[in-house]
Image (cartoon, rainbow, N blue to C red; front, side, top):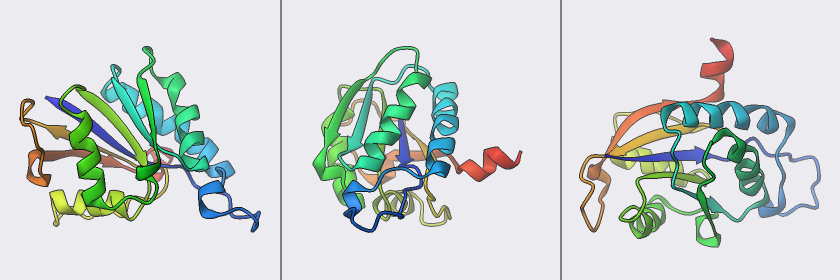
Length: 165
């Protein structure tokens, strides 16, 4: 079985209006939430093989804050095509990496992440707020080309779920 963790970047800071969308850094809430969610991922799967990360500043900062949660440093790929990628683009990208990696984190953006989860199960209502994680499992390890139906939603958790409990 393979594990895919869809991880939305932390809350971004909108105070500097001179920043383009891709240049926005994390806000205080993002800086607080990302380590908590990274530890959650590590508790579900400590042996991450690969992290795929969008090239925006907020996703790169999310990546930086996440790395320390894992005992073994995973391979890292920074991909421009993950920036604001559609669900179909995310599926295409995952298909390039799932054959050779068992446990992947994909750090990216909405609406692509939410749309991806909806295409797996349109009855599963999850808005994918910032810093949220959706754990997916792939049952068929040997399939060359994955489709949405090959993924199973294990859990979807947002920071409020943890901070309230």
